[in-house]
Amino acid sequence: MNERALVRQLAKHSPRIGDDCAIIPHGREDLLVTTDQYIEDIHFRRTTHSAADVGWNAVARGLSDIAAMGGEARHVFVSLALPPWADQRWANNFFRGVRAHGVELAGGDLGHAPQLYCDVTVIGVCPHGKALRRDGAQVGDHIYVTGPLGKPRKRFLPRLKIGLTLRGVASACMDLSDGLSLDLARLCEASGVGAELGDIPMARGATLATALHGGEDYELLFTSRRELPHFRVGQIVARRGVRLNGRTLKPQGYDHFQ
Amino acid sequence: MNERALVRQLAKHSPRIGDDCAIIPHGREDLLVTTDQYIEDIHFRRTTHSAADVGWNAVARGLSDIAAMGGEARHVFVSLALPPWADQRWANNFFRGVRAHGVELAGGDLGHAPQLYCDVTVIGVCPHGKALRRDGAQVGDHIYVTGPLGKPRKRFLPRLKIGLTLRGVASACMDLSDGLSLDLARLCEASGVGAELGDIPMARGATLATALHGGEDYELLFTSRRELPHFRVGQIVARRGVRLNGRTLKPQGYDHFQ
Image (cartoon, rainbow over all chains, first blue to last red; front, side, top):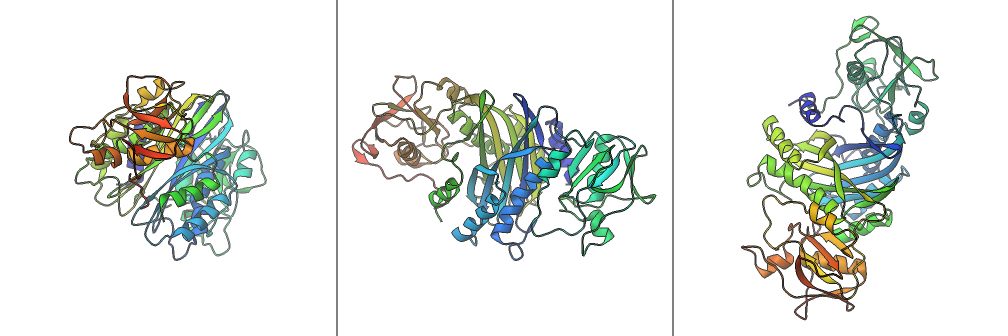
């Protein structure tokens, strides 16, 4: 089963699904709510990631979603299922990684599983109607990313501060979790436009292939009519599809269901 | 590692942990947020629970937490990691079980895992300061449960409507997820009191042992000064500990970490 089919199935009954976070109007603000799983041998290996790395990244994924909507992160909820190899010391270090973000740990659930499994919910806020969406890109907009691509780090920094500066500036925004080619195709599809890519900023050690199709960059991808001090990677056009220097780019990013 | 040690560790950095939900003041209301895991071979077996049962119960646990705080459930977020045996049909039926509660499915995350793993976040609301807590039981209060105990059903009904009627009526409240003896000990500990139990209402097929120590009843356990049309099981006293007909009752409910 591929992810798109399942997400469509989920979205049928859930009009809020499609952006990085659900937008829930409450009083004078909108609540932004996001949920992300972080699973052993799918998202990390315990041989390469320390307990604190796992705690950090599990939360960073949700914070990145809040950043992509231009929100402020307020509360983190961590559900954790521990396998037999994870002892008290591992759990302590995991929570050290969680807390290092400085966002309030407001709750969670603890359990057992044969493999380490973690699910994080982050609640953020933004002024009503001001959340950045995927579907606002306009023909003629510049396309930007907030950093060089293609070399996932062991820990990544959610772009919360940059996200705040994009409110009222970006016409569309999302975070790069599954690779530029796939995520940009999603943004274009949501906005009903296409994209022409040019210069792709590459991280040290990256190749053009990993910069285009590698997942887990967690930089922000956004569009704006303005010229901005970020990495300009191309322009929004009317013709559907994503092209690099004139050639159609097949989305090849990381689909967790392929 | 036992659950209490880990929860204490979690609670050290999270002042909101201790009740069934985190209470987050927002505008004129309090948000109630709860997160519950539902894991194959820990909470259910696929040989005995249909996909729709799993979807129903995974969400029902969170709704029961909202009920225990006297809240109204508003939004459900479902994270689901599917093992190879779970096909599209299974997932469809799972979401049928989720939706059967009639609470908006507002988001979620999908992934893979060797074993079926599900984590549900429920967001509810109640008027500011009106949430039912565990720590308000007073000496002399009656102790009630909302139904007969000791016979978990394949599907249980979260007591949301009864929870609403207990606002301003119950001095303390929680849901019975781990068995009366353990959960009442927790309520008494939070309130700084003790309890004398008398008549225990037993479900058909239950024994006194399963009624006292069996988990997953998901009835509400609450205290009140008033006489109420619920099952009265005892009285709050000053002397610490929980006693049944004068004999100390060792908490033996289900601790997921023992």
